[in-house]
Image 1 (cartoon, helix red, strand yellow):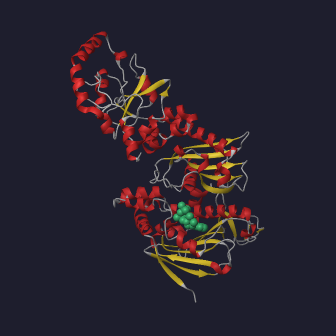
Image 2: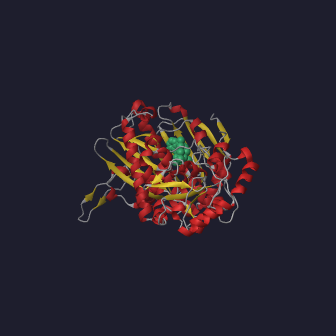
Image 3: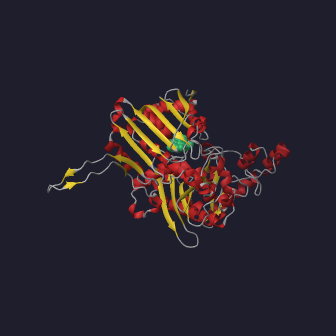
Length: 569
Ligand code: ADP
Ligand code: MG
């Protein structure tokens, strides 16, 4: 007797299924891309494990994805001979969502279907997308190297639950059968399926095959016999790893589809850069900048990094060592000719080759951003609003590229009332007043607070631009930036601020008189405040407010002091 267990889906899976079925109807065919993508991942995982244990291949080393349709039954089946799943794997992977930050993500959904459907795309739909077109999905799988009796059968109608049972399965790998909904039978159509495969899966590093029925013997035009062609599995996609092909032969659509495969992102990428590096270290990199920040970019445990291949063999996902942290949003892959096939995360950690590749990749990304900033300012602005706060970590982390990174920064400023972070340091310097030596900025708890800072009064009066910084990270950023293009940064909240170079003779005289007039008041305020302040000084920087608090020349700014206090220091 077959023991059948029933399990409930994780709450988030239920939410996802519901949302997906109701919102992705305009783009249904992507389910096939997702399932082929999983099959290709499963092949990659087997190739990797096979490096150290050849027996996992079970004398069947030709990895393929075979797709078959049955029009009468209304089914579509995707079978691979990759790594496969055990029963426990199936319960865990096809019953939950394993991504970090999942619960957080789902708590953000608004209930508004149009908005949420965009979010769900960003989240990535994966295996569950099968239910967009199927009323029932049956998965049969067996892990590579496991006993034939240790197969698993998983079945679900995509509602609240799924069942699993143990089955015999002769062949290793996973076979997924979709029982198509009444109005989705087109996906049991041979040519329709072929066209979807070429559209989405050409670049996949594994042959995707469909069965070609036998063509019986026939009569040729001159009465001779044309021999029968027996039924056979026929290659449908190109099956060459995209990154190994010549750039000039690859279309934007192919790059875009490939991005979706490596990133598990649903949306198109913003930009990419594909490079073959030859010389001392040899590698190919294909680096993508996503259009949208992942919902968990600020989660410290969030997986990031590149997919690593060595001589075209997949080695690992999320190799973090090839990208600095401030570029952690970059997706893509790296194929090295120099690293050993048995390379581990530990080996990568402290390795000359890693370092040199990392430098190369960092340079590529910064160049790509520089180019975008110059030639496609609108795209760059959209990049900045998604990832600007991550880039701001750069100057502290990457000393060697500090100047380059500073050039990529964008700020709000008194010159742009919209509040958008759109001003580059170059723009600022170009607008500096005659006699102005420094780049002035103010940091505060929010853009609004920065914009209304009393420190700004004199600058507004003199028409001097000030950068307005209201993000938490800004104070940290400014503590690592001292100059740009030989112009020093100057917080306008510091005591040593001296704008007298910008004064004319008349206003200098007026100031001197004013200073004498208030001497008595200064003493009285000093006595009244006592230990609570370091000093009380006369200032010319205010025009409307009677007083303001400033930090001393060498000490922390008030904003930094707040930051430290909130970090418990
Ligand atoms: P993702 O591909 O982003 O991990 P999916 O929802 O597409 O998410 O798949 C979930 C998990 O199910 C995969 O990570 C994998 O562990 C497992 N899985 C799905 N399809 C296969 C397959 N064909 N062979 C082996 N494992 C699979
Ligand atoms: Mg997937």
